Image (cartoon, rainbow, N blue to C red; front, side):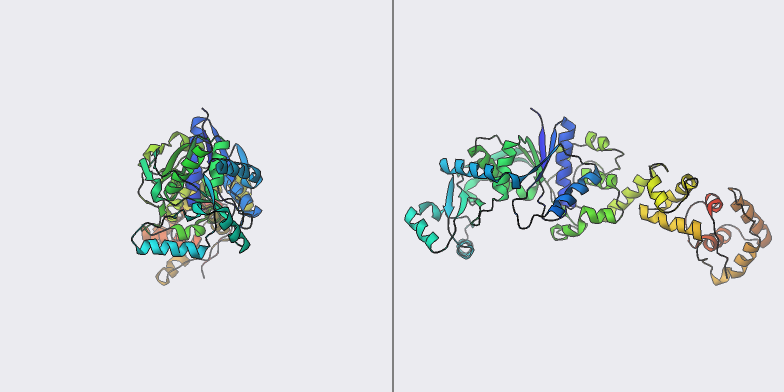
Length: 442
């Protein structure tokens, strides 16, 4: 059987690191098996779903190189959902309800006060047609629940292991709202059957959904896929991250300079028993992926961990790889290889290159401590004329050393700071030949 997985975001916002974890796992499963990866836009909520978010989701996945084999939209499948709803009605597994949100809330509170689980009491199953007609006459619109078989729902989860949920402890899920909106639990079940999905990885917060969806799929005559539920992300100190996920959108991380392979490398290993290490290609990610290595414990995520990986990723790049970025700074093509060679070890993100080119092209404001002022003035008077070569730094500092008696840190650090306006950076022997302008100390 061909492996088929899917990533099914709702285009009601931009995707974040939590979404990416789900997308990446499903993508790797499909690619490792030579199967099919579907991007399915769960856009049944017509009010909140926006084309700009759908476009943004696709742009983010393309930026990461997570290509899909086909795209599906739930908004094009409403007729199919109505057909499936009729099938469930015919099988006696779908029933209409009329309680208001206030009435349902009162029922929940009463059960909780009695120390009982807040499970729906199935009161609507007892309604006569006359009673339903009376509710409609009052202006109430019916909504539809799926009638669960109240036995145990069991499956072997790809991450959590054997799962057993007593369906009697779960409310019959609402599948169609009173306004006619098809809800996720129903649409997703129909789609997964129709699209031949064989494997689903998603967050641990969906375990109860999975239990009910297994029964929905079986009631529709389908075979449930293999399920796995990954751990949820927390902050670096174990704090709840869900409320902050909106600030960790992929487009924000991209704007902060995070490289695609750095982000993928972290998310491909986070929460597993394998160490996080930089992958050099998508194939490296796929080859190193093992679903069984992931655990159930909450997983700490710290966005700062992305920047050492971004630095490491950039160190693997050649000047040719970086040509567009370097050219955009105004670096002449003939200087690009040398510029990249001296700058790359001293950057965290691509944006840091601009500061180094500005130094080379325009010079830097000299940094001179008061106690070094006379020494720097004397040293700059001995500065050889251009053009400077790789030997210039050594020749100059040796001459200054002989003239002043300074050596070591007391010699090199003040001269670096006066030339570059920085305390650290590339080897000065490599940097000096590139400097087009030098600002003289006052």
